[in-house]
Amino acid sequence: MSRGPRIAVAVFPGTWSERDFAHVGALLGWEVRLVWHTETDLGSADAVVLPGGFAHGDHLRTGAIARFSPVMRAVTEFAAEGGPVLGSCNGFQILCEAGILPGVLLRNDHLAFRCDWQALRVESAAGTWLEELAAGDVLRLPISHGQGRYYADAATLDELERSGRVVMRYADEAGRVSDEANPNGSLRSIAGIVNERGNVLGMMPHPERASEAEVGGTDGLRLFRSLERWLTAQPAVAERGL
Amino acid sequence: MRWLAEVHVRLRPGIADPEGQTIAGGLRSLGFDSVGEVRAGKLLRLSFEAADREAAEGAVSSMCRQLLANPVMETADWELRADEEPPDEEEA
Image 1 (cartoon, one colour):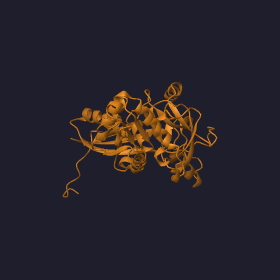
Image 2 (tube, rainbow over the protein chains, first blue to last red):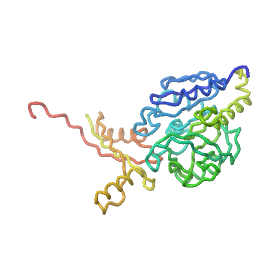
Image 3 (cartoon, rainbow over the protein chains, first blue to last red):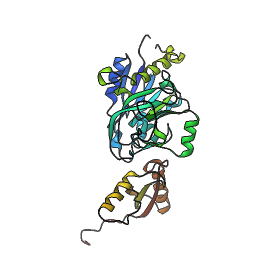
Image 4 (spheres, chains in turn purple, yellow):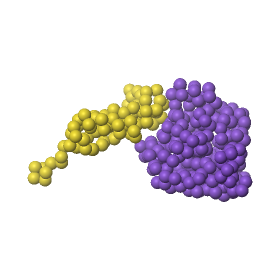
């Protein structure tokens, strides 16, 4: 690679995970640019990240106001053109509110904010962010949310499952999915989904907080390595000098 | 003229409402044994300008659809009335 991937990280008032993404991006040799929510241009980004936090204070509903931030027009276009987009935690909530991904994230069934390490079973390695993974893999990533209970109507859930778009579920360390291993009451233990094309991934866990051995785990790196692998295989991206 | 809308945003029936369940538990622990289901929601009071009632209804409907409620999980209904001017100092 003659240069590292260019990653635009959107920052809303109340976002809190953008510097963790920037830190991990620097470790990986990425060119990370923080993009304030009023900006309308993502530059020549190869991928876009919507990080965790509490955009606009989570007022009304999580992601409800962020969805109308000017930067989201650019993100919506970028996603529609097939550009890789990762929404983690609040980013997932914003993607759902924006209608880029189906469903919604509701208050945790036990009403408490849950901050912990969580095991996840990879259900399907569909899409840009999961190429280095395989169905059945177990990841260990931090979760940190009060509103992560995934909900969609039964028809939508069935369609997501049928098309392999439920990419990860909450599980125990052995990869067993159960109500006990579900930290927030998500329907069908859903922790992450992708769009039809596979370029947009929404997930409640935080891969950027598990990308260095020093912080207790490196499973998050597997998603970022997947992105690098996918980008390297794109002629259009290669032309721009990756 | 000015209008006042009181918009009620409710979780759709069938969606688990842990906040409502917790409130119900609190009421029962106070001795209100007959309390059954409690559903929590939001009340939004909006004051705004519109030419007439039809325009005001249309505006509230549009606000609900575009922002105030997420149809995946919520419904919205509202009461609309003319927003009366505050009384003059002399009259009060």
